[in-house]
Image: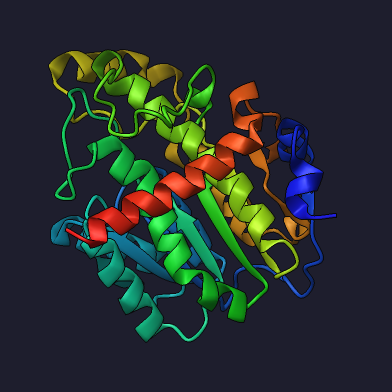
Length: 312
């Protein structure tokens, strides 16, 4: 029976339970190559520091040189004194993502952990240089493209792990598969579109896990919780005020990063793939995240959008 046949009609249960895979030999991240996007601030930086402290060889993906320099200094201090590698890329640009993937393949004969953590929400509808709505380009297509470009290297060095940062914001969202450019609706202050991308992260993880079954490479995603970080502060004074008022009730970036670190490091999840995790526990996502047909269509749409961008 194929992986899709086993999952069809019951993906919500599959995500709750996780696919059972045969992966041996995972003893933590010490000495392993870990690439993290969105690691110059927030939970990405906190995760990089924690994994460096566990002995991982860290490479961070950054867009801004100065922020990357400051982040690298912190990661170096948190670890054993080795400076992390810094890879520069604008993840909203597919050409830049392809250059990033090529650099990773050139520099690292073995890739053990890929953490797709970069993301943003935009108050107004904006387009990437590829003509794709920016939230979708950064939050979904970037991890889709980067991951698929690196899959052979991950499989070759298995066991390996792919981790994607999602969010409970996905609950109630639907991916507009018939309106991929979001010409019809963007959502209030862009949050509706952000929620769609977080649902896409879960569907992508589920389809990816199915396609990787039996390879020794696992794919999981997680919700970090409401974190006291700089996220969403790029959307004007009103949004910054809301975020500031909520800050006393938010968790620390270290707490937000904890599940990412655990998914990267712990041998306890070696046999799990396709899972959605919250505070180190597998959780059932929304019913919309349990639609395997939507996951398949999303994968095909993503392939089409990345092909179209390549032809520009």
